[in-house]
Image (cartoon, rainbow, N blue to C red; front, top):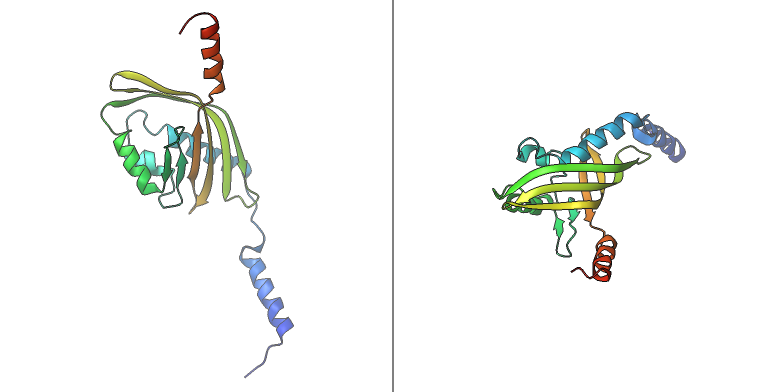
Length: 179
């Protein structure tokens, strides 16, 4: 039996590790940002021209890592299974009709390793619920994506609605005598 000295073994192991991903491959950042943009847009515009369950889930992590804050204090979704139940109750309810989704000021950052990204933007999302218009206007939308098996998936997203504009509008109405 041949004995290998510890320094020789460590050198061999470190050389093998460097050849197996120790140095990140060159990343085409423009191509990755384009793919990330497609995933972000697809995750909110899945319902045009028709509601499609396949398109809705195409860009979402389909496991317990998926997390979503909605604007309400009770609007936390943990895990893809919980999101599926929410989508069925809201998006696929026949009383809901999507109208438009407009994304503004989209900013995307890509990790150095190229397998994670985060974004922020403003979102105007309009629909009709039971014949009445509904909307998230100037919603702040942030999120995190991971590249899994060559596909960008949302693992976390957070929606919030600014309240200071509503407060200023309410104060202006009160000052002018309107309610």
